[in-house]
Amino acid sequence: MSSTTTVRLATRGSELARRQATTVKSTLDSRRREVTLTEVDTRGDQIRDELIHRLGKTGAFVRALDEKVLDGDLDAAVHSLKDMPTEMPADLVVAAVPERAPSGDVLVTPDGGDIDDLPEGAVVGTSSLRRKAQLLAARPDLDIVALRGNVDTRLEKLLAPSLQREHQARLEAVGKLDEIVGDAAAVVDSGDNAADDDNANDADNDDADYDRSPEEWFNDLTDLERDAMGRKVDTEMDAIVLAEAGLRRSDLLESVPTHRLPREQFVPAPGQGAIAVTAVDDDVIDQLREVVDHPRSRIETTAERTVLAELGGGCIAPIGVSAIVQGEYVHTRAQVLGPDGEETVEATRDLPITDHAAAAADFAADLRERGAAELIEAAETAATADTTGTREDNG
Image (tube, rainbow, N blue to C red; front, side, top):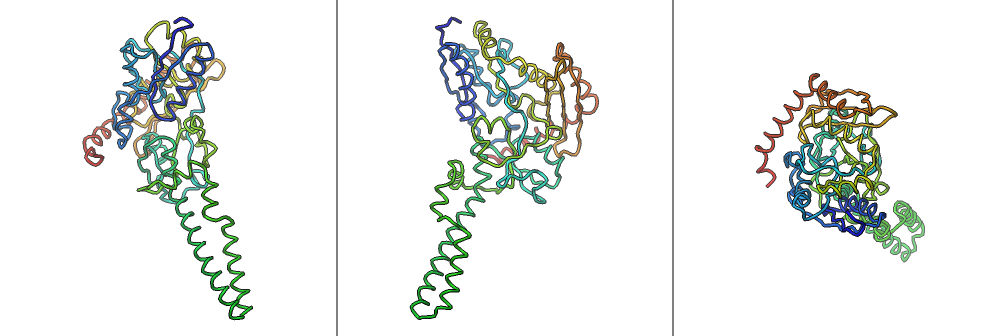
């Protein structure tokens, strides 16, 4: 690929996907490459009311982009690595893994509390089987509800009810103040100064509760909160769980109260927080690897995805794998859960960095022998029954 070659990148059309693709574009731009972004619609984008695990193992958010690369229509595709199936077409390679963002999960609540602060039977939204199982393992009393949509959509669904209630309360308070002020004026006309003082004090007390008018309060809201005000929500939630990386890349981490979930208990999904750039052409691959690839992030995600590939289960089993390079080793934690979180097989292992892929495969084999294989098989059976038995409920 010469310095004058245009690099044509494929991306999904969501705000987060475009932001991720733009980071890759900016890196290539800095090396004086002419880069274009082309949005490609995927099956995962088209089926908006379907849960992630019901979309199958074929990469619902990935395949359409990679087909453009395999057909030669585009040069490379930018993906969220955790969305990618572990089995890829023979000619397609992960040419680059840029430096990874934080890979953990965060709990988002309207008031910023942590998981122990949630009330008994609290409703928590997530689209992930892994997160659902981990939440129930920590708090069996929680009511986990399905949640899909872009990052901002999910946040709006969480924030909408409390914002709408506050707005209504402010409107009602204004009405009450108008009534009190009217009564006070009538008393003044009658010459009852004592009653006037009492009513005036009541008005002052109500005014102290809301130091801004409803209009002033609304004008001070963020764009996210204003959008939430107009959203209709069928199920009110006390909290939702999101990837920290998605919030950061969407510039929304500071817009909502969050609490980091402990990684030892809530092991992230393999590849979470990482971006992958796939390509076919050797020259494109070489340039992407030289300019965009981040060696430590590639090692960590390779270890995670190797464990996932050897375990099987893809996105239909509750599996968490987290790898962190520490000196000469890759400290790796894996967690396989039953759907309700009651059963868990988990372990940690330090993999030699010089042979981390082979060591990760051995680690996964040991987990399977310790009972992970049975949990994954049960999850696959449940997912198959769920897909065939509840399809009409989603139509």
